[in-house]
Amino acid sequence: MNNNDDQQKTVSSNGKGIVKATVFIIASLFISAALLDFLGYCEKLNGFAVFKLTTKTIEPKFPYGCNDAVQNQSHQIPLSQNETSRLNPNLSQPSMCPSYFRWIHEDLRPWKEAGITRDMIEKAGRTAHFRLVIRNGKAYVKKYRKSIETRDDFTLWGILQLLRWYPGRLPDLELMFDADDRPVVRSDDFSGQNKEPPPLFRYCSDDASLDIVFPDWSFWGWAEVNIKPWEKSLEAIKGGNNVTQWKDRVAYAYWRGNPYVDPTRGDLLKCNVTDHEDWNTRLYTQDWDKESSEGYKNSKLENQCTHRYKIYIEGWAWSVSEKYIMACDSMTLYVKPRFYDFYIRGMMPLQHYWPIRDDSKCTSLKFAVHWGNTHVDKAREIGEVGSRFIGEDVKMENVYDYMFHLLNEYAKLLKFKPEIPSDAEEITPDSMGCPATGRWRDFMAESMVMSPSEESPCEMPPPFDPLVLKEILERKANLTRQVELWEDQYYHELSQKP
Image: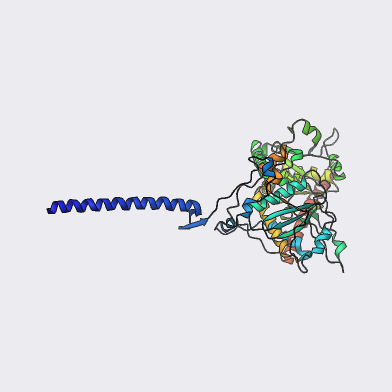
């Protein structure tokens, strides 16, 4: 055997080794890719490769298909069971929550020192529609009485979506919820020696009450009047805003609603245009029975952004119409309220809205429209800032974050271990969604959280410094008073004209 043969054998041997090595490397890459697909994915973060743990989850049948077998199964919340999903927060720094989150501390202040006992919880049950217990990421409900329409169901649906949005991150807790309009826990009833107010959740409160405010049911849809979940409604309203630019909108104040729920709304109708007086308003009665029979063709929210000014006025209590009105880019003419929901306390007169007197609505509205039409740029700015607040600070991600922080702070105050009543029922997306029909089912499907949040909850701001809170309230009052002085001066000068 000569040297050439040896060289050929060496080359052949080396070639085979290279081929084997190449095959091994390629196989390793495929195996690595498969492992990465199973364990998570690699993303670039500040120039470094970061591996994030993710897991496969089993979705409930609803909204893709329901049957009797599904409804008879042991109901579960698959995403909440997936404990590893809470190890998968976005590694970026959490954003700061909107400023109105600070009111969570104020709403819970009555229980800060002594905490919340079981006896307090039981007292809250006197008017409650349901008791909610969260244990190990699962929700259990005991209902006491039926709410107006399906408020209670859609509120509970929203809580289920929160558990899916932040699976495994809600603490064990127990609470009572009243789904009626007006607050009932009067602060005067719990002064002096009687300092143990019942912690009762509801949709609104006022300065004389201690009820704990919580996002209302309509964020997940108001099926009875065909108002879609907030995320869908907001998207539609934003589209409607683009149809008619602000400068091209009707230069009057617009309101459409039910005037029969409270005398203050009936009083508003006196400000409508007549043959003898024009208060710069265009007011319309909303007949929901007629709308229902006609397919709600005249009550689409996105078609009601055609005026430069829109009026907000309370009904029997606060009104869910608030967010839809303020989302229109129109300058909101906000009739002095008695009640507040969870986000309105973060807004300021002349920045987010124009304040309207409640004891002299017609003259106040007429002046507001006059001022806006003579200060067009400023009026448009107020409308846009208010609309941006609603669209950004009250988007669904922030609604869930508000619920998350409120329930977490509330749970810290509990002085007892939450217990599941023997007659309580576990609720799940399947148990609530599958039996639903028509719009009720559609809206649940549209508002259903399909995967956990990829980001951590926003960072909760600290409580108000007492002096800072006082300054905020004084500023709000002073700005409102400034508008009233402008109005008084306007009518005084008008009266002096021949």
